Image (cartoon, rainbow, N blue to C red; front, side, top):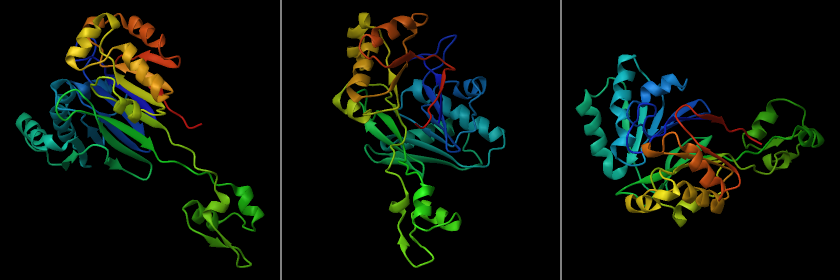
Amino acid sequence: MHVTAVGTSGGLPTSRYGTSCIHLQLFGDEILFDCGEGSRQRLMRYDASPNVDAVFVSHFYADHTLGIPGLVQALEMNGRDKPLDIYVPEQRTRRAHEMIEGAYRWPSYTVTVHGYSENEPVRQTDDYTVRAFGTPYTDHSHGFVLQETDRREFIAEKARALGLDPGPKYGMLQNGQPVETDDGTTVEPGDVLSEPRSGRKVVYTGDTRPTAGVVDAASDASLLIYSAMFTEEHAHRARSTGHSTAAEAARVAAESGSERLWLTHISPRHEGDEQTLETQATAVFENDVTAVRDGATTQLTRE
């Protein structure tokens, strides 16, 4: 699972940094959390393919959505043929259609705008699930939890001990089907599979204040990507605008038991002073903290 910070500036792009966009590559899929202005160009700059499969929009402010029309049009001009799924709050589906159509025209390839609700699967595959949780920022604003499917490892030694030689029956057991040995004994998948191992979990908060709901959503996250717009010196500004400070992000990470914390959606006023954000966060959260800027990447591996 490869994660790239494509746009990390909060509110407005700067000469160096674009607005909100996170790219994830996993199990053959490429997805975006938000798609701020100029995201397609920066995807190419940071070797993260713009030929994405899905875009998840946390809320409909411009710094999270203005890149969508350009992405859709560019894919059309590049001869896109596979479908593109765009997930928006269910109350914003009409606005999403108007934004795409108003910028150019509806493309020839299939673009499907899906309206999502809180605490239900937004997208579900055999390998992972994405669900949305509410955030107290604006009307219909959300974060996303990407949870990898729990895995059970096949233990060949157990299968051989039960009288099964390597072959097609091993695959059937791994796929959850019982099989019979040569003497007619039934072997269940649970007889030869390990205990379930929790999958990796990435949590993207979107814009938010620190709340119990956000802590709950981030529980045991492998990577928490948190909108930490301000230093503590601007805590009053964070409160009045519905955002968070780096230290508040760190408290959410600590209370949720997250393994790593990415601070993103950084106010342009703090450009060049990211170390202060990190310092204030690490005073609260003892695990890995990074104030990420455009182009930062990480690889999340299974234990």
